[in-house]
Image (cartoon, rainbow, N blue to C red; front, side, top):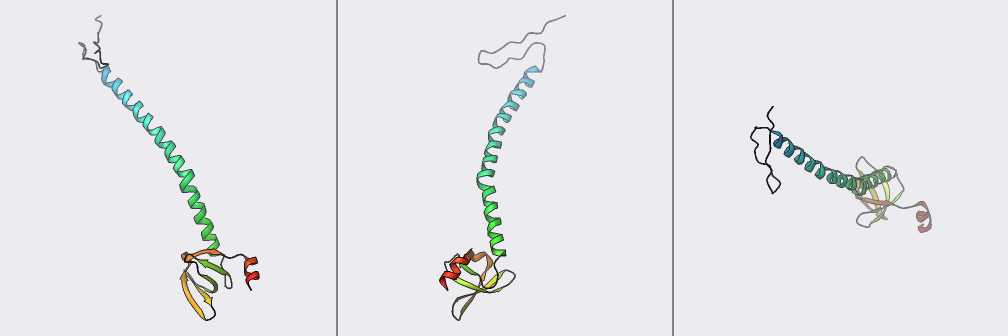
Length: 126
């Protein structure tokens, strides 16, 4: 049986062997795959951190805002994103008709509502 020999370069590379074996290509492929896995792990950690610190809390805030808007009924006092205080006169599909002052009625989008005033605040201001 003839033994195959492999010459190794001083820089770490391998020289082609006299037997023509393809084991050098397999070693390079394994090293490249290890590099990919080494890059994917930190990327996966970054995606998880991004999800738990940015996406998930934003979805929670959006859900709370939607529930608050859905709970608004006629007679509730609201504050718009522009800072206007008004009393809801009519609830429509995607808008509210509010009264800002006596005789001043406007129609606003539901998305323009920032907060709903608490019941204690309504009684105290009356």
